[in-house]
Image 1: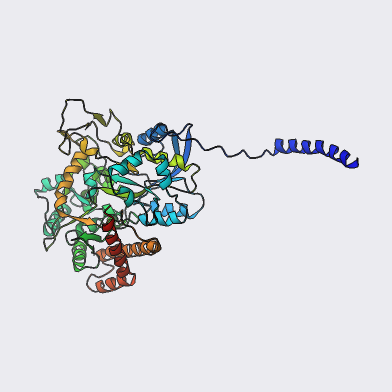
Image 2 (image 1 turned 135 degrees about the vertical axis):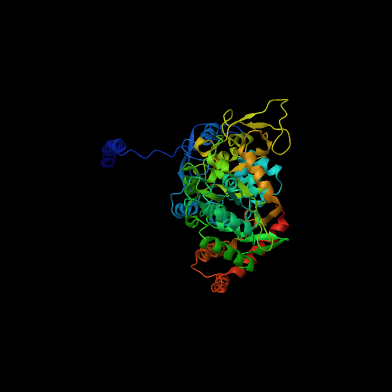
Length: 560
């Protein structure tokens, strides 16, 4: 009886306590159910507005990711918005490494392959559980991804790690001819004409032209001392010394490490892996470049500046102050557009020059490029299904068209019966209306993407076309192309990945630093060369080349 009374008295007290606690200290709300995704290929991809967090190395044609027209269209079509953490391409690797070293990293990483993540990073972070394996997600939710795999046999295998998992989705570039030979020098045609000079074809003529640019008031403003004969920037595609080095031995281009500042010195010649940075030809190239530097023909800032710092030298005055710029294309160092008076119009691509032995070359990235790691889903993803469907949309024809700018502004569809000739010689499906530039903020120009050879289906133009200009500028390079080592498709065994990454970055960083020091005179090309080569070997160059050879042989057996 006494116990029953106690229980009766206790129940109201418990209820009162419960009401007080829940009024002033409410329980945290339950996690909302993840949004349901629609059927593969259906848009929008979710049944309610959804947000992801992401990292993106914006730049290039992204003036502002928050208002970028292409990204806004992607979000509208998919029903997914992204809260982006942005980085420059040059700093992407460092900033991404810091994010991934902590616990607060984003759900997706987009466009970082080659400028923040290497192929080996994908496997390393994947096996650590930071990047999710995508195989099952693709099988269940992929639509445009699956179409791409079916259209390009060997692609799925090429992006599959040695453990059988896919940890990142690629950019598959099939239509950008100018992207296959990206390392170019753009010379000021107006300066050549003003001085009565021809385009140089060899290193001796190159020296004569650059000397004239220095001494003869090439920009015609009355000041013979304000010209900079040539410049570049601290990034592999803007590395002036490496463009010149190709007159002696193949060198330069992205090394696949994810660090945009590092060059490649590994090429495939006669079916064999070769290494150029320890050869007598490389040494002679350094000697020639050192001579250009001591003559005051190379801009000192080229060793340290970002490519955007070149723009004021081209656009900033009444006349450009630079005679030649090492860069992938003029949009990287000048304002581009349809105005015929824009300074970038003065620059034309100079074909590779011949060295004393007659050699000339240009790094070739192959005609179908697979840029791995352009879309990664991390274990922070609240709904991996939404993330993979978001990525899937990027492989659609619709997105490939969006990437060409705003329809009706930058391009239009051709009409039946127009029969306009396309850039590739076929019948054009599209026609450019206006040059797309960075300030338009209407293109993402990052992976993931499947280009579907779309650019070559645009009409050739009797007026100016930037894409046609780049296509035509690349043609003279083709006969000198040497295949760069295919880092995008090699498969390094999981137990060697960390060693491979360390060797590549250590060796390439040491070469880059040493090249700069040889050129400016901090190292002597005669007395310090042998020590430089010995140090390369101490850093593990023989073992590194062994790993490259093994990966190359394995790649040949897979036939990606």
